[in-house]
Length: 126
Image: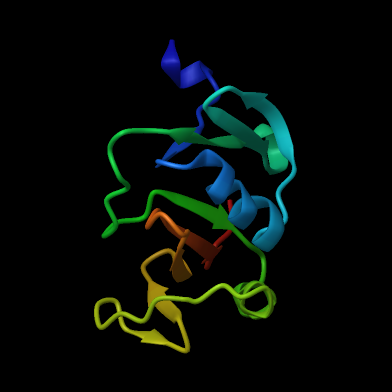
């Protein structure tokens, strides 16, 4: 059953080599596996994601991948130091890029292809 399987996100890009620069150089990921048209990255606890060549562009406007962090203020500051620009929204309202949402606090940014990424600090970690 799928409920018993690990899942991962695949983010589309027209140029895998260019997008690698952001994920590896700016965000600090190390490739786990490389394929002719994709690169797979591992994160904590066996999670992973891929960037993959696609003919359809990313559709910004919703979160495509989120990272759980223990201290969102520290994470946002570190990412800003690496050149990441956080989005400002009216709904939910952000203050210095961070919003209070139902389950905690969140901040959003986009990769160079427009894929929307988030960092999320849970109010009640599980």
